[in-house]
Length: 179
Image (tube, rainbow, N blue to C red):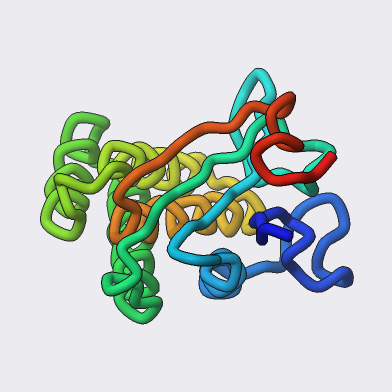
């Protein structure tokens, strides 16, 4: 059976209704453990506000299937980039220098540390901007940690994903032989 990345990837005691206790590093490790034959499948659920990692396949709205350049997969580099982005986001949020300066600073940092040709480059910037705004607003640790997990996902995918396909829920069984 095909490995598909969902919240079920994490230990049951850490997975009540979300992955609230999961660090970005653990999230990345779980995601990378689902690479199978040069592909990574991530189950996503969407609501009116956001798109998140699905709890399980039955709650997923769709699966995103990525083809990867395995030679580029390096967790240490991805973790270092996420930590650097987080530090910059935190610094900008606490300085409160104005939206234009914050966006320009984030664009510079993300641009210098992201493969502009990567298929998720724009999403890395959006996640970094969202993280900065959450920090500025004083969001809870749970919300910030969750956003950091999604930021590290985007950084990783930008680093090594070369192709993506979206598989809608009604096509799961046909594509993966699952219900």
